[in-house]
Length: 336
Image (cartoon, rainbow, N blue to C red):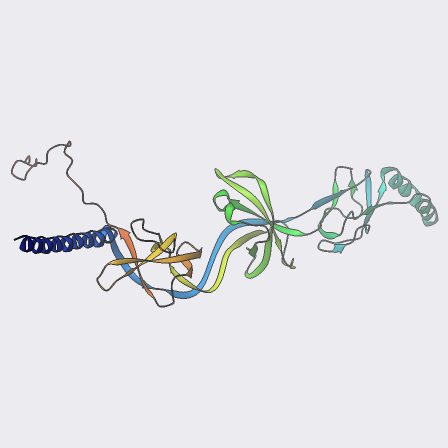
C-alpha cells in the first residue's frame, strides 16, 4: 500500500510541476507581448543609405566688420581726394588733402595777385593730409574737391573687411557654433553661393517682431567683387553634413521598451516584425538627424526591414457622471 501511494503522489507531483512550468511560460510570453498589443504597425520600411544634411536658415545684411569714419581734423575746404570707392588702401596712405578756413582765404586772395604768389603761399602754408588709420577698403567717398567741411562731417568711410550679420532665432542658437560652415547668397546674385564661417556670436539678444534674435557675424572665406555694404543676404548654417550613411525615418526610433530584456543596455531601439507577427526591438545607436531621417551608426544593415509603430488609441468609455444617452425611441422629436 505504501509503495502504491508513493508512486501515485510522485505522478501527480510531476503533473503539477509541468502545469506550473506551462503557466510560467505563458506568463513570460504574455508579458513580453504586452507591448505588442499596445502598439500598431504604421508601415514597414527598409534601412537605406544616403546623405544627411541639417541646416538652419537666416537672413542677414552685408556690413563692415570695422567701419571707420575719417572726419576732417579742422574746418575748411577739400583740395583733392586721392581715392575712389572700392579701392584698397594701406595704413598711413594719404586719402585726401584739405585747407583750413584761413588757408583757403589766403589762397583765394593770392590768386588775384598771380600764380607766383599762390605758389609762395602754398609752400609756406601746407595743406592738411587725411591719412588711412588702417588697411582696408574705401566704401564711402562723401566729398569732392572744392566742398567745404566741418569737423563733424565724415569725408571718407573705410572698412577693414565686409561680413554678413545674420539674425538667428533663439530657438536655433544652440545649433550655431564658432567656425561652423556657412553658405551665403546675396539677393542681388542668387545663383552665386559664397562659402563662409561663423566668426562671432552675440551675447545679447535684440527683439525683432516680438522674437528674441541674436546677431551672428559670418565671415566669407573670400570677399568677392559682388559684395556691397548694405546688401541683403540669405545665410544657411550647415549643422550636419553626412555622406553615405545608414538612414531610417526618425519616427521609427524609440526608447528601449522597459518591459523587454536589455542585454546591451541600449537607450534606443527600432522594431522589427517576427515570423509570428510579434514586435521585437533591435538595439541601435543613432547619430545625426535632420528631423525627418536619422542616421544609425550601430545595430542595423542596409536593406534590413523594420517597422514604424505607434501606440493604439484607447477606446472611449462611457462617462458615468455625464448626462444619460437617449435612445432613439426616447429622443426628442426635431422641430420643423
